[in-house]
Length: 418
Ligand code: ATP
Ligand code: MG
Image (cartoon, rainbow, N blue to C red; front, side, top):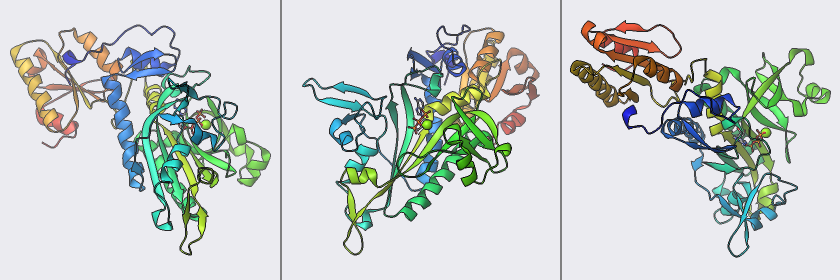
């Protein structure tokens, strides 16, 4: 991507009315555009980060046998009335609207009911189960406060997975595989070491649910971490009784602020029963379906990564999600400089390396400030001077000093096959 062709621009001014550091930086760097509190659009660079996170999630969730769908956002009220969740006193953050004829519809905030309802058209026998279904789709929630930037949106991108099993044991096995897949996802995003599987309140079926909490001073949650056992306990269930049950000692736990980056639930048979979807077992008997649901906040993760890795100069993306691997800054318009920069851009692009090519007519200081703000892992400079000296200048975003390298060394340092 050539920066001369990118419509977004960076800004030196902190956006007024935006208190969250993640959104401030992402707006200033041109990754997102704020439409209203808690509602953001993703611009080209931001869209790439979001897609990169989604692709990591897709790979791991597909890897445990789930298939991807895209469910409707508009949802009929009748389905939700069957489980009692249409009622605003039960779920207070619905966005609801009406058709021209007055029929009420809801906008997706989760999808247990519609998906169980869909399955009633397909599942009859024990041979049809288990099945695992997920999607990556915008969710709508009328959140009371939306002051954490991408970390608490009123419209946000979530991966939601649902499992439908024949027995509790079959469910439990999948539940653990899903938890493992989550930890693999966080590890690839570079936050594995600060993310803890955490006991939280269980909801309808099980005593606990599992949250995945990433330590962060801007987190909205309070958790108690046991470093040795790599687990946490959410404040909402932090009682002497629970600690005894989990065999945890109060003095070994440390209180921390954290961001909930995922949440998995055992739902028992309540939803499928309410939607009237059952299966017949080998003996021809009617049986209830055991469900689980597994949410993971994709846009929240983007906000968290932005905020967590940032330094005083701007964003610092982990390579796995960065909108490009290399920021190629061309300084000067000498024909040899332009030629060499174009050649390197083409060579990297041909090798499958994503490059942000800063081919704009701007001062070096401005280009370097933009490179730092945007946070691409590697910055390569080609200037009239480097061309004359026969070198390339390479700097990693996390380091402050550039290195001078020959062409082969550069290609090697960028991990590209020669
Ligand atoms: P929270 O406790 O933070 O309000 P939740 O428990 O309501 O979230 P779930 O319904 O389990 O969340 O949603 C699954 C995941 O979606 C959460 O773990 C979180 O990562 C993400 N998520 C939830 N609400 C939001 C939001 N308003 N904005 C961005 N991401 C969200
Ligand atoms: Mg929660």
